[in-house]
Amino acid sequence: MKICDKIEDVRKQVKEWKKEGLTIGFVPTMGYLHEGHRSLMEAARKENDKVVVSIFVNPMQFGPTEDLDSYPRDLDKDAVLCEGVGVDLIFHPEPQEMYPEGFCSYVDMNGLTTELCGKTRPTHFRGVQTVVLKLFHIVTPDNAYFGQKDAQQLAVIRRMVKDLSLDVTIHGCPIVREEDGLAKSSRNTYLNEKERKAALILSQSLAVGKELIASGETDASRIKQAIADKIATEPLARIDYVDVVDFDTITPVDTISGSTLVAIAVYIGKTRLIDNFIL
Ligand code: AMP
Image (cartoon, rainbow, N blue to C red; front, side):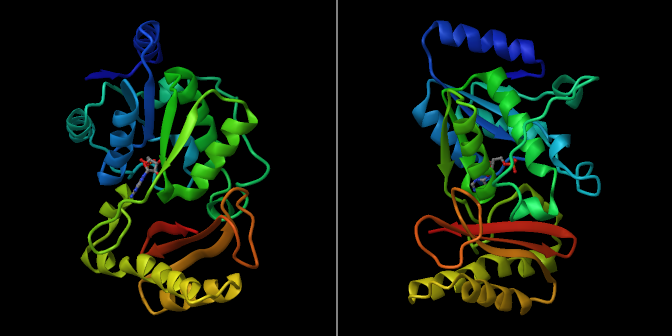
């Protein structure tokens, strides 16, 4: 397994693979890898000749008061996990390599990024789109793998690929959870013991919503209210949003029909966690 920190080195390797007619699967990450990331890499491993993983804590997708500096990093451990899955190349650039002095080009979107996480993180998706497009140009993958854990991100990337006619197939992969239901996340490491227990309220409240829908409820406001009421039973939890949107357009729906995303963001202490389910 190669580890490259320069764009040119990745390009050189990818060109050699392409000359041999090999397909490339790509998994973009911010590192501190866990089973959720591993599931994406395994899907990529199964469906491609070569697998590239990027590990880059992208400053552009963090707001000024967010956790860029404290975001967990452990390249050595990440490399062991990647090697175990059979990854062929890790791209681990420094911010300066991705955004050299004078950098001023961005990818933006008018729809899809205003609701959910876009409300409290207004510059987040611009940072995500810009870095992902740049990574796609560097790695030129045939297939790229994203987790449904970040459902809005998945919808935004799909839209960007369609709108800009990018020659890559996007694969959405299911949420991987801890045994007790908490969605795996690099940010779970911020939680102390009490908060870790409190964080179960995310998956538990979504389960309440799911049950309600299974019993025949289609009114989005009643579903949102039931989820919010459940979250309110946990004293350490503070709601950022509870929303029901169309999964393709990320616009609010009043009644559930078709492909619907039920998504929440909740602060547990100072840590902001997200979770969702898609109907
Ligand atoms: P991140 O390192 O948090 O930027 O995540 C990199 C990729 O891993 C994104 O496509 C995430 O959606 C995906 N991912 C993160 N956590 C999970 C999880 N628990 N299950 C499935 N995919 C995940």
